[in-house]
Amino acid sequence: MDDGNEKAVLTDVDEGIATVTFNKPWKLNAWDTPMRAEIAEVLRGWNTDTRVHAVVMTGAGERAFSAGQDLDETEKLQSGSDGAHWFQSWRAFYNAIRDLDKPCLAALNGVAAGSAFQVAMLGDVRIGHPGVRMGQAEINAGIPSITGPMLMLPRIGLSRTIELSLTGRLMDGAECHAIGLIHYLVGRDDVIGKAREVAALMAAKPAMAMRLTKARFRQVTQAAFEEAFENGAAYQAEAFASGEPQAAMRAFFAARRARRAARGTSQA
Image 1 (cartoon, rainbow, N blue to C red):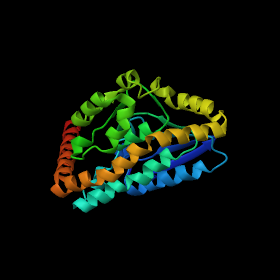
Image 2 (image 1 turned 45 degrees about the vertical axis):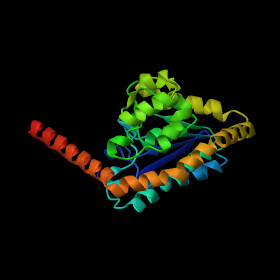
Image 3 (image 1 turned 120 degrees about the vertical axis):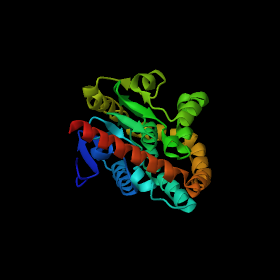
Image 4 (image 1 turned 60 degrees about the vertical axis):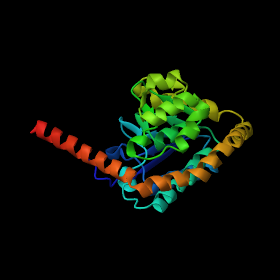
């Protein structure tokens, strides 16, 4: 297994298309606070970079776009105030995507769970393959879902938003495509190529019209975004003060260690 010494965020700009790759495949590209801050800084820089006309987000490896929050970090939160502060830290990360004046595409190469599902929804266009799995799995880790439902509601409706949030299940690529969450469903090896094709199409549109259209979408969704961050911290504070998320994460780690031990025994 990789020891994590590689860069967590890889970037490339080619023919006007900038690609950011979440590069922790040994952790299914899960992000912690420093990694999120780095991604946000990259996106803010590209927003004013005249070389960049479209942005593609993807994950390293074949297993994950991103598993979302790195539970090694959140398991260490000790109080309600820790939970509230952690929740508020997502605002700058999500704003870095929302504030892009340029088209932003998610090239989904694998699982996108929890906050990574939210990041994919914050993108303008999503490209994936049938093996992709996406969903709002936060409840499985004892974390109340706040921003996820806010993003799902206008995209897939209240009924499905409730079902996904309360079950924590992940949808496959076919279901995501059927309900409009994945716009282009292609073969596993064609995801990046299709993402670049669509990015090039969007990058060729008049830049001011693109900027103003995206600004209008931000305007009509801003109230829900503000409400989620205004009220969500109290929910996270109550949850983390109870210790339930931390206990759920410890149980997850124990089950993972047991699975790894069983695999090691079976291979002996």
